[in-house]
Length: 130
Image (cartoon, rainbow, N blue to C red; front, side):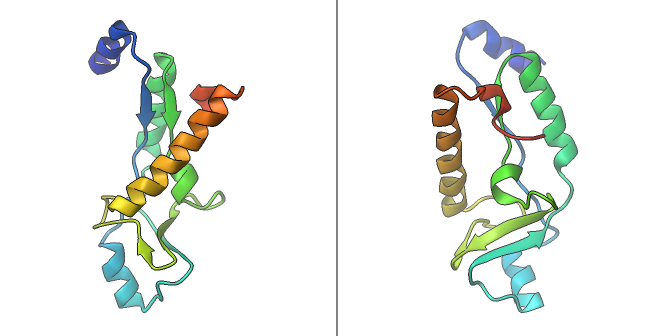
């Protein structure tokens, strides 16, 4: 709460970004062990990180901040724990939970798209589901 209160007092626009998926091992290791080809979009099962994002979204809403949830970009809409780790041979994760440069750029492009949509009438506080 202290951080959000401090930011609120500055008057700056804030976007709270939720956690990204985390895996038991590096997606590279999992794909090699499971003999998964790095073609198209590759999805792997992540740890359950939804509860943290629900809390972050709740805090963002409490202070009137926008919330961007990486789940909406990286994970399946039906099975939110099935998350994309690579696309067309490009890995989106460096290790079990940190995005690669390419993964970061991929997410930022989606964030910028959402910001553009919010300026054209969509509510910026509802950028993503919990």
